[in-house]
Image (cartoon, rainbow, N blue to C red; front, side):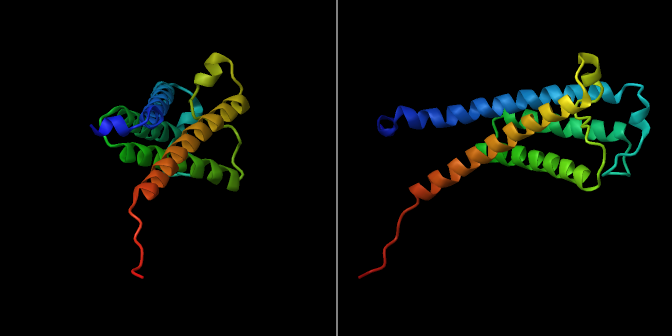
Length: 166
């Protein structure tokens, strides 16, 4: 009975968000796979310390981040609540953004090895890969913040309005 009062546009909203979350999960699974594959390579850069998390070698950090990406991707594809999915994606994206800002602040090399050595294999320069991954980060962070904002504004609109007695 209540469904007859729900417009087609209102039914589209969760579907749009679910499509977005699935696309983010696919991106995270692909980047996690690239990181895992690269982490077991033989490049000498893998044995060097990361410029931000200097206690980790690049190889260890790739495995750690790939694991986090895979966990968030599985969460996005799970039956968890939309708020948990949104929150986990926002958390991961903000961490990526803070890491990139940290690299910029310490004037580390601009190149992002977000995909490990996969970029070399497919013929992308470090700069191109960095811009692609920055765009991907913008898509995931922007989308998750948009859906978070939309869900909060809908809650505010649904909240009862109390009036003072006259």
